[in-house]
Image (cartoon, rainbow, N blue to C red; front, side, top):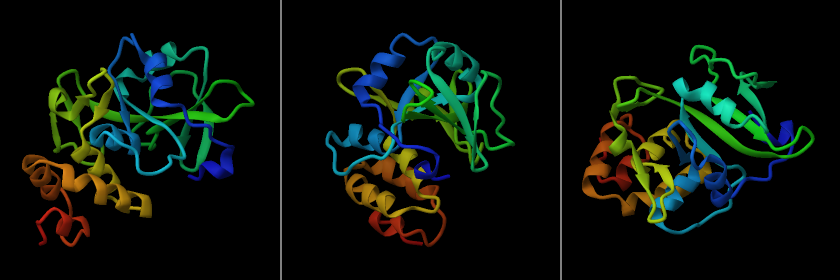
Length: 200
């Protein structure tokens, strides 16, 4: 789905997201390319959007929290206003785009993740998971974000040019455990295996 076809974006800053979600009664985290920048401690490219992750089970609570905003479910190449009901994994209802006003630009994308109160689960393969304490990291000033090896795993499926750029910056920063974890979940022949020192 192309954001350019569905209206302009004015991505929220990380600070704006923190102010918006601070105190929320559900788990949330920065995801996407910005999460990788939080891990690296620097920025290396512009971002066309801003991404926040939540658990699917928390979607109704997130809708209540965002009641003054205008969320739309983005699925199957279409957008529809979100009234707060459950979001279906079977229907690929994995993203919610949010505006501050009906005629305004898109400000952020809520990426719907999977898991239970104890563990994160990879949406594309429920056999892959780990405790939340290992799935999320926190910056020195308290901003939660998705662990870099998990973020790269999401980006590894059909990587775009910007995903290759992100991998080229972040993979050298990963410790040995994170490198092994990511390499172990990439398909044979994936181009990032060479960078990980794990060609197979």
